[in-house]
Length: 404
Image (spheres, helix red, strand yellow):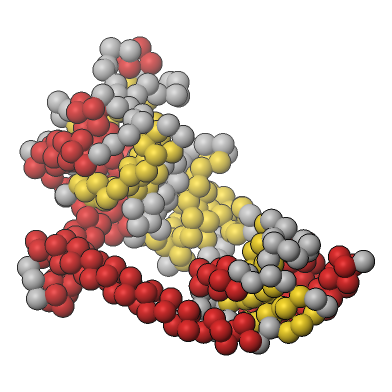
């Protein structure tokens, strides 16, 4: 078993190193190299692995299995001397996010007395789960400003190993789960935390820390955040969007909320006007639709796909046409998706919910409701006509049975 020296602890800024491949093996179908020393950080503690090359061969993943560090490669290598190169942009990004998380977690603890329960460093953003049942922008701003104050002060960040005896005398933010020598990351006069990740030399290198948002999860709060270059790029992208929108509305960026409020109000009024006109059009259409009804037994039945209308209009048409006795409607719309409304007047003893279920069943649809009115959907658009045809076929025997 290889006892790999972890060079990233000695110098997390080292991007190239020379070592020896002690053993080649395979892991989940990929060649895997064990080295006597490595700068490649393996996935652990919420921090993803490094990428780079060994003798020019891409390193696709770095994992730790039973205290062995395996470098999963794009192609096998021969045991012996090897030159490794770390993808520095990815490594430094992870250092910014991880040190930023330590700062942010301590800021939550100091400002809101809220412990960090877990941490995940993602490819585009990171999250921490906080022991808080709720969070608002005022509280989040307090935490964010404290975190960035620590960044601006450019406090030293150091790491060293402590014995179990020494650990007991430290005021750690979180008790370590491991035994033996324990590595502790120290943000001067601010945070002490057991951690095996890679970190920057001083808090100023973390760059801006920004809380993007949060959500409640099982009585806790999951906070999404960005640090350093990620925060800067996010700010730049959002600023470009705001500037573009401000230009379209001919207002300043600060006036965008009011501009959107005016737009939303104008749209609401326009929608009401359109709906009023559509209802007037529907009222004009009702006599023509009623005249299209066919006599089935002693019931006048309108079976129709209503083009240009939605489910609300369909229900309005159904209710309007059923004021007359001995009426039934089998209606469908496809905007925005296929939906059906089968209904009948009070004096027609038919179970429309049963009829709808039997009509849509062969086409994978579903439906339900009351005997006098049922609604359903889930049918492909191209099968809507077939459903209506089947409903008409099923309807006649039902009417004849009800009369007998």
